Length: 405
Ligand SMILES: *Cc1c(COP(=O)(O)O)cnc(C)c1O
Image 1 (tube, rainbow, N blue to C red):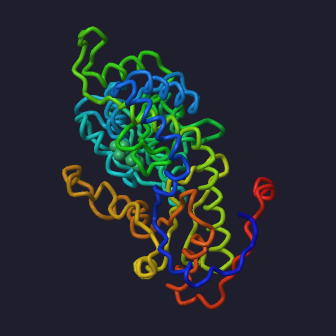
Image 2 (image 1 turned 120 degrees about the vertical axis):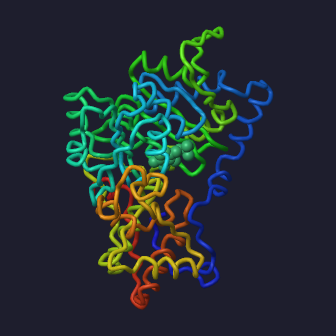
Image 3 (image 1 turned 90 degrees about the vertical axis):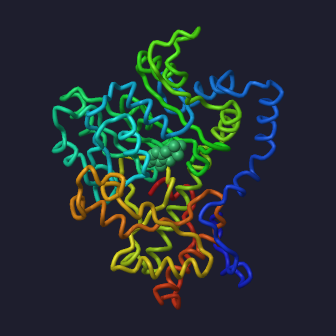
């Protein structure tokens, strides 16, 4: 991986570079997955059961939480967490406008009002000052979203949470394994919510989600909310949901969890290589690489750059013509989504989120991305800008040097 190699031959440089390649990942774990799936079929237990309980124990250990409760999706994890935390119709919940729809969708779904506040331009995460300004007597929760795999700034949120007695619901859907000051996401708030959507860093073979908490009462409530509010023995103490995790998903996820840290290291290595190549080739005046904040472990669910000077569409069109994957997460901020028009936000209200939507471009980052393909991506950007003549591919830093840096 760290050896320098000659420029890719022309045949290879025409190969498509997919934005994500789950088939490549599957090839590395096929036998393990097959035997886990077989185990489920032999037991004919498909919903909850031992596999889910085992996954819950393993995720709790991974996140360093007391409890983990599986459910049907990341969206459901957010909904159940908001309800368990006592959010009621008409309450306000503060979250980011620059996230996947589900963050605010879940708030709406429990009858609460999404209060969208602007983001920090460097991390794309909630701006704590804006959160503070938005707190009212009706604020029932704060929902930071650890966008793209890097934790939000938590310390000021902890202060606000304690001062106003407001729970923090972490939207950790993109951030399993991410750390803030040495602590893992999932225990940075009252309840942590994770998604096992196939393209997340820990992705299942379908939908799935999990919630983490250190609070035994909240854990008990989350556990019954996912099974129609049943305490056990058809004793329904409240009306809940059918939001259970499948044993097959748990079995697959348990296999993948064993590889997660190695995959995360691969993502971080690719991110570092992009930064090196973008800098070395003088592209950083147009393509700004993501900021990696010093007190955090970024797990790179996405490698999201900012393309400045209005050149994003040109670059993306050119990359697509060369069959190089790239994507915009997210093109429309949530405060300007049609379904949230009733909230009354106008263009210009949250300028950093709007600017991010206009500038972001995510590049392929998965662990299995071949080194030559990663170089092709940078070459593609350079070509799009008409600068391809003087490309350089310096040797990747050796692992030891990287750690020292
Ligand atoms: C994926 C995602 C969700 C929703 O998870 P699902 O499992 O797809 O329901 C919520 N929030 C964020 C930030 C996400 O990226």
